[in-house]
Image (cartoon, rainbow, N blue to C red; front, top):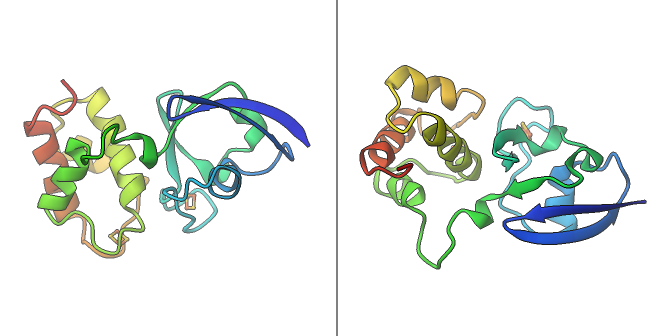
Length: 156
Ligand code: FES
Ligand code: FES
């Protein structure tokens, strides 16, 4: 077991875990943050996406040792009040979430995208979300939700 310190959603956490335990499993099992989902477990689907030091990462591919000292944001840290974050609201209003398995990752990928491109083109949206797969929506409603979030000035 290795002692690890990291900041999760603004709070410092100390845990002990095997050094190769996946960040995804630490979040879900040790910290009871179940928003990040396991889809493929191989870095292909993005359902386990979290922000690590402001980069979008697949938490199924990150050994916890690599996250030592990192700042992690999960979907649980996106809405800081009891109200939905504006990006979540745009997904809700545009039908960008159906079964919801991909949605936490999509919201974090959108967050990351809009930080980089506050007013993204369609191509930038498609590229920005290209690591996140959705089996339900056909993507158009998700892209509409991202456009709506950009129009609402979410990143400004
Ligand atoms: S579960 Fe991590 S990328 Fe699919
Ligand atoms: S809403 Fe079901 S996988 Fe995207």
